[in-house]
Image (tube, helix red, strand yellow):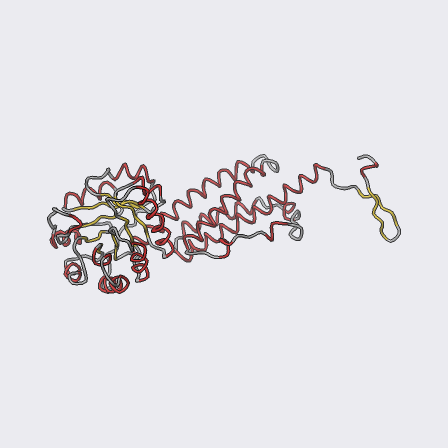
Length: 372
């Protein structure tokens, strides 16, 4: 270093020659600080996700994967990276965003922290290449593991909510659509299907996105009727297919392994086929004649009784069910029901929802296999 590059620092009258950081040393310190901050960020985000897997889901497998990745991240946190930390002079400590100050649901909390972890891992992957020859590769692999964890966790969440759901609202067109659905959600509803056979796609997408946000705010599942493309476009939790819609296997290829797929069935053969194809749940009906299925004869309570004895996956009796006949359907063996008019045309959707759930909660669903 040239003499001109030095400067004087006076201490108690003694002049000391001090060399400033070289450009190379400055870059190294900056990289160390970046790695330090993002190693902390990744570990913190993983811990938040791990706590929900452990205490919210009681799932040791998912919690264990979070813990293993946390420990792997920690193994890269060398003392020289810790010592580079300069919190006082870090301008980022004052930065915040209104969305960070509140969370609408556990799902939004998890999604925010998955995003946080994935961003941190990407930073570690790139800047790690400047620090250690294997660091970039290690964090690239971990980033894909986090993607898989996110997919598995969200799929597990959907399956658990599906297993707990007793009442399923299938919507019909209404000027008060959002108002009615929210009223039902306030009454304890946890499963909603958006069904509109006549609206333009632009309207469907707009309504579906609003309904998805509403359902997720109440920790409820949101399903699209028939249209796999709309389910993907609006990030729905799954799709419900009729007998004339695409095969379950093709829908699964398009939607991936962790979104839900339901199938309408009207007889034993359709039920067995839907189970064999890998449907997550089925509709059983119509139990009674209903204007929702014009021209389709009722399957009756006999089919409900058959499903109660032979269906190993979640199933919902559907078709003309309301407060007046729900107990007949329950007596036939149903432990879950789907409704349309009894809530959509009700003047008090919250109370109707609460009443239907109170009747269904009198019976315990049989243990069912969770396809997770």
